Image (tube, rainbow, N blue to C red; front, side):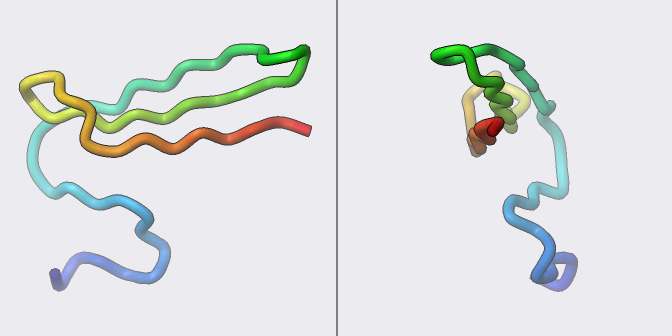
Length: 51
């Protein structure tokens, strides 16, 4: 795909939306990024844990 580069962990050119949830798990922050298609189906998920 010509638009993909090394910095892209996930790339979808058309449609959908990004959902971000911020929580605390065992007292530590956690951010979850979910890319959804136009039908709401989760296409990609990335969880970042705080320190």
